[in-house]
Image (cartoon, rainbow, N blue to C red; front, side, top):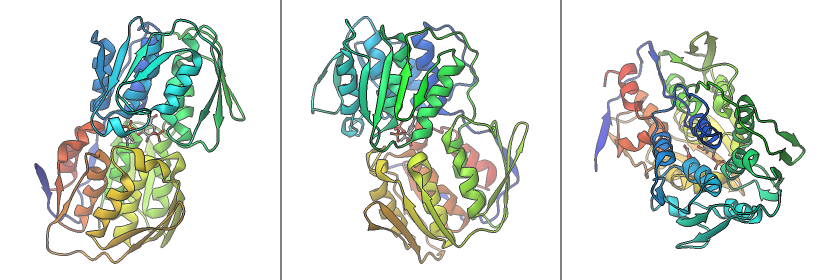
Length: 404
Ligand SMILES: O=C(O)C1=C[C@@H](OP(=O)(O)O)[C@@H](O)[C@H](O)C1
Ligand SMILES: C=C(OP(=O)(O)O)C(=O)O
């Protein structure tokens, strides 16, 4: 298997990192624009594979749409397909065929869509027929598995003959992603109301809007980690705004406690080192994609940490809890579930002269979360091209800050 060796490098160069654009914003803008009949010109779409796949599939006339490993592409296109004029088969990688879709499919069926599983009940691949008659606009949906199901339904709601009244049931995870969906829909001229646990959208038309995608705050989190862990570092991240639609801007406050100060400027944010706390507790329900990054930072710095809200990590690109446990252990960092849903990090990490090999489990965030370890220890990352899913220029940017 291909790998990349990262030489130990404790101090980082003072540079500007351009970042990729957000794949979450890009994929929403693409679906909204497609529902509107391509009224708008979208700017700064992401080079992420997940977005490039969405672009390609939206233009495709093929019956079968293969999303590869892109969760949002799978979920958003599944809902979008009921608005189409021909049947579609949605499929993806082996892992994608293990990631649940039943909650979304159940809701689409309630609305009146005809969907059939082609393999295992509840999982892709599945075949979707265009909606003929809307049976109801009253739909209840569980919120604790993936917010992507909810975003997928919301974006097609204005184009449904009766609109949609979506009642969110139980705990709602990744809530800022739902808010991002509604905020973007509003920019494209669609009104929605979110009262208590019900989101209501009347039938209406999306308007033209020249959307500019912001840089990716999830991608930014790795640079916060680099700065937190390096002996000396000052990095400017370009294209980020203090008022963002992305919930992963939470990294600003998290890292303020873990040793990184953020100063916003007109064209981005400057990261500088500051003292950090010795103990850290955090609920990642709103920002699950930050958990791996923060786990590595706490482990390397020997910060006693307690994490909750990690439920969705098991059904992402890999079982991220399992993967994290296994790889952190190689650095004498222990991630342990002490009571249901509560994970503690205890570290005996000491840098060594050897090169430690990190497996990535087809998960871009495993590669990127462990890369900042190079500030303490030489490492070898297996299958480095996994980063292409969300951040294809990641290794080029690592080269900018280190002497790779
Ligand atoms: O809507 C989105 O753009 C996303 C929502 C989150 O997924 P879940 O809602 O499944 O937690 C997040 O982990 C994913 O990277 C992107
Ligand atoms: C979970 C992720 O993506 P998705 O669910 O869209 O595959 C991610 O990017 O970390």
